Length: 426
Image (tube, rainbow, N blue to C red; front, side, top):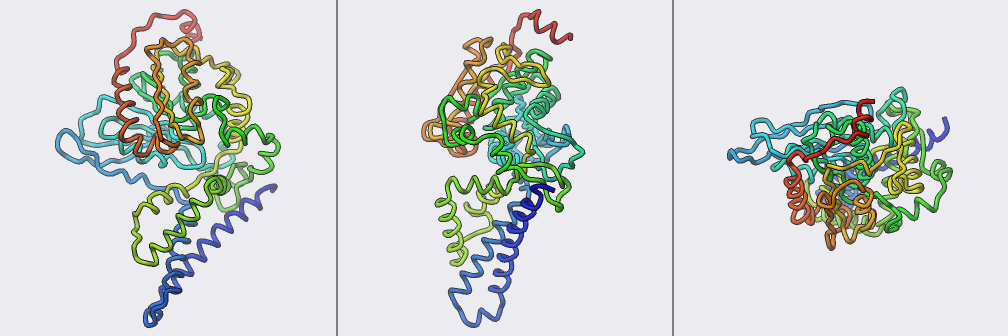
């Protein structure tokens, strides 16, 4: 089948490099070599160890590994995960903390579907768990989803979010990180018309491309520069025979990883060279800074072709969210219908993926929302990763988000709106 050979070729290259690393590690670890100390042997062993780990991590979904949560009762409570809703393309996952008093805050974290697993937000989850009951969208790897499950584009994604919000109820506070910010805003507007009582209390949008053209970046420039035909030709492949999703058209995780690394090639090359040196000198550790970062960064997942292509075309090229022209199942979603959900935007001044100006555009779209229900924050010196998982998040942004949640925890006073009632009844 067309493009399937390319997918299998990429997997073959990855598998071969993993095998070469494992072989080098095994041979250089041969006990007899210890009789004659040789730096070349040590460096070969180090190269093999780093190479095997690097290429093996690319096909493994990381574990959550959430540490026990301290509580006011003086005990540390273990954390388990439970799927509240299970669907073909993603689950609503709940972090259960048995035995602790139920927190007042209930938070839905909307994880990005942009090449990495939801575990990319592990540190965000860990930082919020002591103060909130946390749920997260756990998206599945498209290569593992049979073709019989059908398509999954940005409209389907939006409807998944609508279903998750309905399940969690109106006392929920939603935090959307990066890619899902515009679709989470659309899902909230959809609920405002279709089921107002299911709307969340607040919506925090972190570093998302609500209006990609507000502040152009390399990402937005690429989206405008290439045609949809070129994207489909260059980026889309069929899942190979090794996985359950054989034959499904996807934007492969390995291809995405190549793009990620090429954006900062010198930095990544230096990081791996330095790590080989540390391993050779015996200075590396299983959970050192390098492994902790790259075990997550290298773990990539395939996206369905229709999700990737519709995101580029409708969010970046046509600006359907930015122009308030987004439709779901043929129905126009009017962001101006959001009248009671408090909305806060968070941006990083050094974000080179969703630059300042792209996310705050959401506030202008919420024409029906009072100004006292709107808030924004720009974190000076923070890059894209830092605004949801780094030092800036822990020290500055997280407390602000929790304060925003608390300020909008009570049920808002709302007058019945005839138009909303008619639509809801229909």
